[in-house]
Image (cartoon, rainbow over all chains, first blue to last red; front, side, top):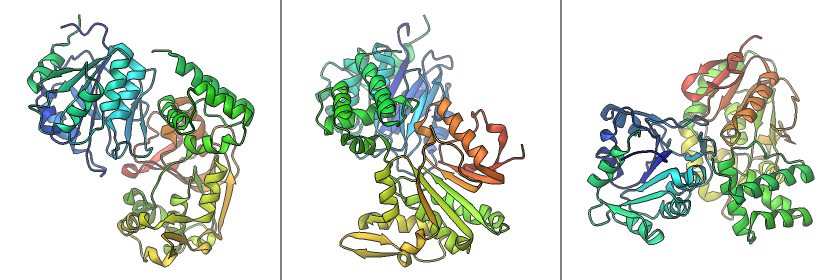
Length: 191
Length: 274
């Protein structure tokens, strides 16, 4: 599938998301044509172990998002623990230590809503497994801006609450199991 | 990339805020400003950002409430304990060589960082020779900082952080608990000057030995970050120290060469000779 017309992928998840991402991110080719922005709820300590974990498994570069860096294609950016990750209109990334949103920092809503503003119809937003409702409003915003909204099938998700909440807020989102999400995302290639 | 109506409204509101009240948020990172303005708009009951702007211009008493949304930062005392441990173990030995010290807490908000430093300086025997400057653009936040009163339920975290920072005393030595509040000892602010100061529009006001400005620069765009860091450079004494937030860095700054990394992991920089 061509990535033409697309600018970025944003992925959010909570409980079970590390395992889910382990089935998605390693399949992305080294020359992946889009930046991938990821928020996973992790405890607020300072060492983001996810970056090292996924960098070892992935063909694409994996790093912690830095304030005001441009989001480049072929790079996976994880939100640092205890900071929100946002996208600016010019495609650079911003961090914020604003208050928790949905009891979370980083919050998936914060990423999705700012990415929807920045990328509009060229955003692919993917809601994975999780046990709360963070990300539901953000997925709504992504769909409202014309982006592609995808939700992990609650029937097979490790924790169904987040996918269910996302589908309730955004009923037109495509429901896919993990394998389908992985193959869809990795199929997005330069035209 | 997209220029929707609300983005135009935000641009216009920030312009109005500047022209009418001289608060300049025009070069703040826009994504966070948009979130905060949206929150302000909803909670203040306006149907659009334009309506909020209309209210602001015609009911100036709204300014203080809006500033609360745009500026106030939630922080903790001794947030990132390793930063304070590095100040204690690596920076304090240098500061001890000066007979008098000036410390600037830029963007002090409700004062959590200021009291953390005042306690650390007392523990390290540096307080008496130090003048602290605590600055913010929000007068309500400055009043709160000057009051030094925090909800008691936050003290457990503050205490834990203080211990992890290598605290040499008990945090409870510095406050009295009363009606669910912790009131910090007023002698901690006997050496403090509280002042209105903007990193966006104001200038150098003294020669500092340490500037602590954490999780403020992330709210600025690149150009404004450069302005603020230039101001810090010009405000620091020779070999003075600059402490930033754990996810802030001078790596991409226009002024990077004016500083060296003093404690790299804790984002503590030292001013180099010009």
